[in-house]
Image 1: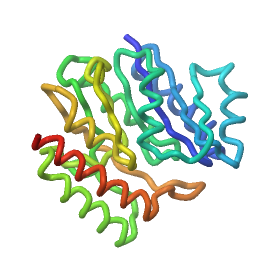
Image 2: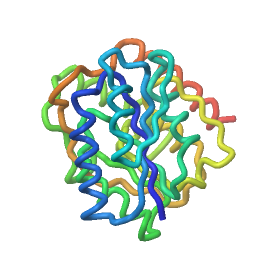
Image 3: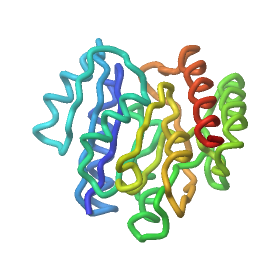
Amino acid sequence: MKVSIVIPTYNEKDNIETLLKKISDTFFHDIKTAYELIFVDDNSPDGTGELLEQLKKDHPIKIIHRKGKLGLSSAVIEGFRLAEGDIIGVMDADLSHPPESIPDIIKPIIDERADFTIGSRYIKGGGVEVWPIHRRLISFIATLMAKPLTKVKDPMSGFFFFKKDLIEHLKLDSKGYKICLELLVKTKFTRVKEVPYTFRNREVGKSKLGFKEYISYIKDLLKLIKYKIF
């Protein structure tokens, strides 16, 4: 069995080496299976792409260099195309998704108890370290808006894993930052499981979420509602 993890990057140079070490330690000590990391870099001006090229000789990583900042969901979709693993995962590069939580989230798939697992902030045992009121409000509203499409408590999660065969022949076209919701609507999974984790605040760098990403989410949501109805 092999696991592929897709990690979009934009100006994450200061986090990359710590992230690689933590993921390597997690697979070596806890999961003990083959893995690959697929970084999709949107031409980061801070040199993230160049650093990844230097590090790939010592780590099982693939790198996609894109010409500009083309969006998180499209980056993830490009990463899926290179994935060779039986299980595919997605996580952020800024350490807000703790690598040490990967074993708990992936284990139900390895044990054949789930086809799709989600790191959830909104079930018992999950949470967020510290968020300002406006961030909590935006997350609450976005999750509420997705309720007609899924029973999952945290469909906005960016930390999830699934069996690769779920996306074979599947057309994905999200433009916003929440590819998980599109997968929940379009894939033919039979067993989905949420696993609690605590979302951490990034220590270095800046959040990539802005007004454009929120507008893209609303557009994607409307398309998914139309897809589900028709």
